[in-house]
Length: 299
Image (cartoon, rainbow, N blue to C red; front, side, top):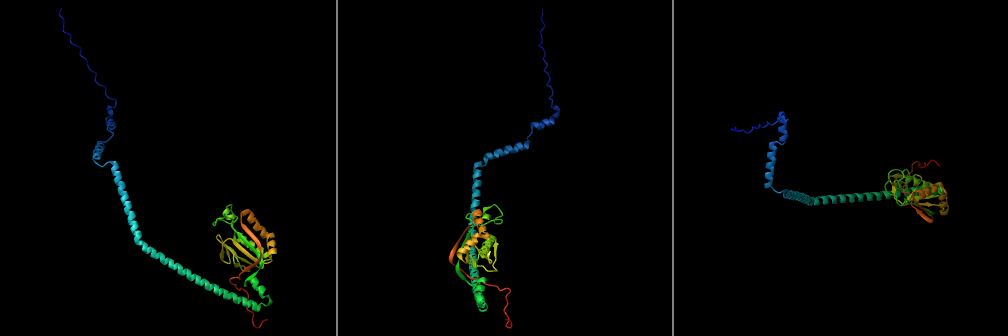
């Protein structure tokens, strides 16, 4: 039996199935090559150049050194300019000082002249009062403050509270701030002076300023003005009169009680004492507003 040669079976390879995204070749290419070739080449070239350049740390040190050199140059130039302009500034400063001193000296001379003329006018006014006032000349001069007086009286010292600041916003007793409530104000001084007058004082002076019927006590900022002259605390009030009686009468009066309230509630400090003798200066000047000289034909 002759056998027939048997051929091996022929196997057929199955053709690969098409890709699902075959129809989206453009999108596929974009996704596979998201980085443009030009960007890739530039990145590769920058990397190769960096290998040959300066290290990053060295470049930072060089930049810092350059900045320090620039700052040093600026400081040096500024110092040089200041040294050059220093003599000019010193000269201008000295000229300003000399001018201020000269103006201050001139102002002092004018003030001295004003005081001299004021004293001369006061002396003439007192002479006229003594000449034409008759027996009432001394009383008129006393009431007008035209002459200095001395005699028994009281000394009343009023001062701000200890912790009072020298700057405040509103009125004295209008806010809860201690810097406002603890200060002596112009209206407080007005009540004190009026209380002394009412208690029997014959003449009063505040910090050396003699009070007359035309005197005014006002405020300018934090300062108290007496006849437009600023005063600083403590305020020393001298009053001529019967010392013990005047002191008792003032402390019992409504104004004395007002001062006690300031002392107890707001810390305002006050002290009154009878004095064997107090000295009050004459008022700086008197201005006759309504009086006119009597004619020769009238009696």
